[in-house]
Image 1 (cartoon, helix red, strand yellow):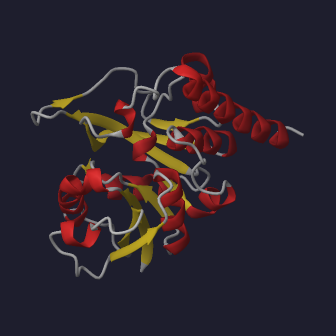
Image 2 (cartoon, rainbow, N blue to C red):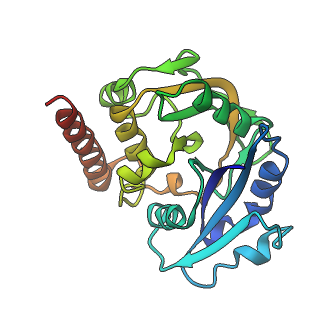
Length: 247
C-alpha cells in the first residue's frame, strides 16, 4: 500500500477541536492502493492529545511529543516520524472536506512533474457558518514561481498553505517548516513554488476554523517588527533558491 502521511501539530488550545479533525480524516475515501497515517505531534509535554481523541487506539494514529517550539517545530518533528511518500498538512482545529485526500493524491499522480497541491478553503466561523473568499487562481497547474510572484506583490499567498499536500522529498529538501513564530507554512509554500510547479483544486478541501485561540489572531501576526522580519526572511530564502536554480 502507498502511504499518505497527515501531519498535525497540537497544543492545549486546539484539543477541543481535535475530535472533529479526526472525524473529517476518518471519513475520507482513499484511492485504491492508498492508505493514510496521522502523525500527531504534541507541542510540549502533557498536552493530552490521546485523551482528546474519540478513537485513540486507531492503529493509523501515531502520537509523539517534543519540547514546546511552536507549530513549525512540531510539524517538522512529525515529519521525522512519518513514512509516507506524500505529506499532507492538517491543523488540529481544522477539518478536511469529503474527498480532499483523494483529490490531492489524484493531482499528484496525474501530474508527475508537480511537487505540491493546494485547494480552495472555506472559513468555518464560530456560529458554524462557512464563508468563502475571492481571489483563487484558475483550476489546474500553477507555474513554478507564480506563488512567490503573487506573494511579493501582495504579501499574501494566492493559495492557502493550510491545504498543502506535498511530495516528501521536496519537504525534506527544504528542511520542513521555517523556524518562525508564524507564517512558517507560507514560507514553505513560497519555497516549494520556487522549486516546482503546483496544482490548485477549485473544490473546497478544508474548513478553516476561525476562533480567538488561533495563532493568526495574535496582534503581531499581521503588523509590526516581527511581521516585517518574517516577511523579509521568507522572501530572502525564496530569492536565494531561485538564484541557485537560475545559475
